[in-house]
Image 1 (cartoon, rainbow, N blue to C red):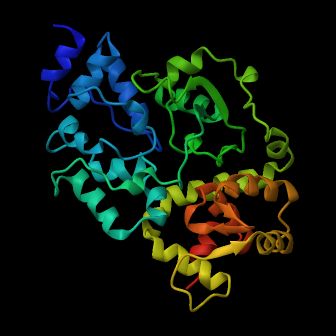
Image 2: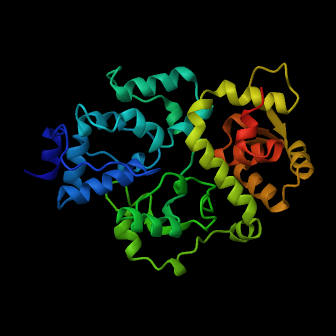
Length: 325
């Protein structure tokens, strides 16, 4: 049977043998890569068909909860791993949820738990809030520790996020692997296999902001730590009302009931008064320039890393920002 004919008739096999348990902070894509290795399947497309029953793009499993409803079939009944745990711990769902409508969040959870039989995700999953960085990325010190502890490295969720340039645990510079997001659409690239071929000394991230990252190292470590804290705790603060009400409170707009916009000059003043560096301010401007109009920044559409930089400036960190009544 030819490839295209096979995919027309193929259905998931139900519970999958040797399905690995997720590691802390591991991306679903990484988990599926490890299953592919354990399955012994020679072809990537065979494993993709086995997992999804059709030719699906694996890129969406790096951060988003797309296709996670299939995990109920992969794990089978009585599994020690729940789809709800995978959603919260092994995707960027807690980050997506910070600016989402609560009814959309409930729908996602109901789909993944099986309460609703649907595979149509709300459009907010494609929000601008959470961006991937363009490559599969890793912290060299985390990878070394993973090899010692688990016998293999894996792709974590956090380093894949735009704005995470340092490891929040080791304060080490995040590295780009040789694998781009286009490469992973229909291919499995287990971290252990990829990283064995990389000389860490030769894989410094190359971008036009590298001088800013090195000069303002402490700023970007704090940014990564804030994003990490939100990834671990964001489910407590889900729903757009929680974030924009705190913005309005902090900005002195107590009576406003909608997302605020902030003037560029006002934002510069806030950064200056709170001793934020000029480099970090320029980096923030580069992230919000696409949503600016006549010097006004619309906070409902800025990326996550920009939110965290503003939270750090006005409150010290996201935890203090959300502690505002």
